[in-house]
Image (tube, rainbow, N blue to C red; front, top):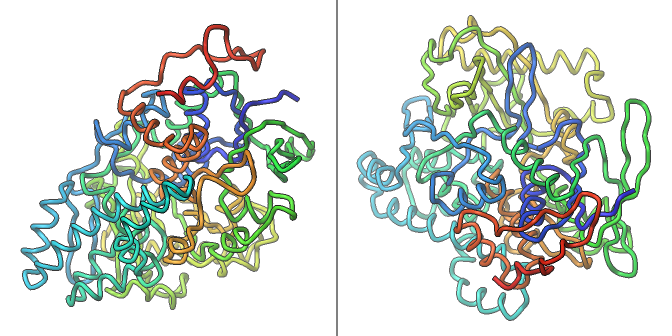
Length: 545
């Protein structure tokens, strides 16, 4: 087997981001190992009967020209992805007795809320200030967990008041700040974007997701697969490889440091064990799996238990629809639609998904967001507990039995009945439908209990500082959402945190400056037949920038 400079476990947004940055900026030969037969993690797509849907990316904030996250994304993808801005009113919240569509302008959003809820004006102004402050703080705070104590201590002392504010639950903050039930429900409407209801989520995580959409939302032209389509050639250009159907089973540790990984290569019915060696391993498999399953037992410590204790309780049912005609014909305009059956976001706990009206449904329209779309598509997502499907957890994909298929069909019928009541005529458009459950998510991502956001965004995660790029094992780093924050943008920055950790204590500021320049430093790719640095280029030169 070939040796590599870096091995990355998982091809999600965080793993791809870390690999691309290390290849471009340090000339590293990167090997990315993906257990699925498709590359990209939650950025991959799937097709049925001529229709194509995204599996995880539905919209992304902060992707406007000149924004810091867009500059980082452009550096990671080599400017290989175009981003289409969605409608100015991109998120529509539909409650039983009122609707509101968020504008792509935070100042307008604030003014409109004050006009609608004038008695809450002071609280509304405070809310927008706090969201902005906490969004900035959380990124710095999470990054600081992987820096030396001489940097961490001053930061913690200087931001103690924000830590207290950010560690409140979202519900506690809203109850403290507002009295109007409808306003509190409205401001918490996007909780599905981070997968935890207001009573359980830390307000800081609510803030970082909410703030990311203050200037609108974007969608990748050509669908989310365009991201992997841009990154994979970069990895290979620098002598690296991207392999699918490779499940990492163990991180190898020798003499107290990472030495590589052991993996199983699945070829049909055959399973071939392989060992890949590298002095640096970056795991995009999540903290719980990395600490609790991949590291040898001798290296599992308190952090392992903390990460596993934070296992996400929620997953999703995803109903993917292929349509005969545009969804515009029944009243959709391309904005995301959130359908709520009441103001209590905690009521979902009591729902029977195949019988009760869903507490919340999220409707997304890939074909109306993507100018390159060639067919009409729609997606409907509903949060659900993994436990509802635990009885089939030991069964194989596509072979789970008639009872499982019948449950899926009943849930899909309940979802369609709910949407049809609000948007008559939708059923007549459906040419094809596919239902995915938490077991589907678990099968193809390896995420325990079908978690779609990694570790949940709880106050405990923040207070215990669970999730950081650095780990107790020399040469092992974490990437992705567990190393930063939730969603595509959070996972991307988790990959950037991992890459920055190889660049010294101030690696992240250096990396952000490079992203601001717009292009990677001019470097010759490593030869695909040699792991040596080309003559004339100094190893590690990037560290001096």
